[in-house]
Amino acid sequence: MSNRFFRIRKIARLVLSVAVISIAWTACTGEKTNISDLKLCKSIEKSGCKFDSHSFDSSQPLIYCSFVIHNAKTTSDVKIAWHYQGDRRVLIKDTLFRIKANAPKIQFQSSLNKPLNGWPRGIYEVEISLEEEKLVSVVKSFSIK
Image: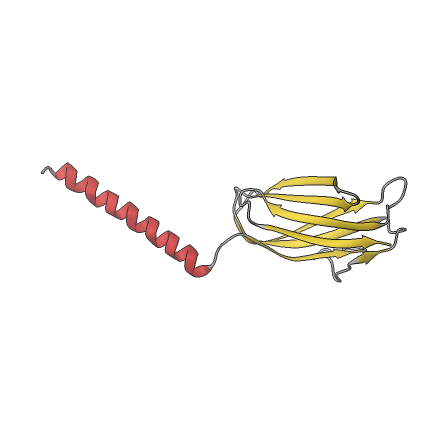
């Protein structure tokens, strides 16, 4: 066998070793992208919602949400969808954000404006999902009274 064959074999082993170590490192450190600290509030601060609310008055002009994405990758798309739960689930507003840099922790904020005719009373939801990882999704319900 030629020296070239042994060099290719050596390079293949090195690449395989690096891949195995990388997978093992990710599994050990738990670097999976996830969503946490989803809160709803009447007013927002730089660091997000200070208090978590589950019910809002129909006179509330804006409803805010804040949450954190952990271990975000540059390929992550974050979708924020607001729904009304009437006779059927109705999408009110959705926004898609592209994460542009790997980061261990990113704070997000979003808001929903009061409709011109006022808030219909009832149950609403905000759903946060990571588009590349279909199984990563967090939903929070709230009511307008």
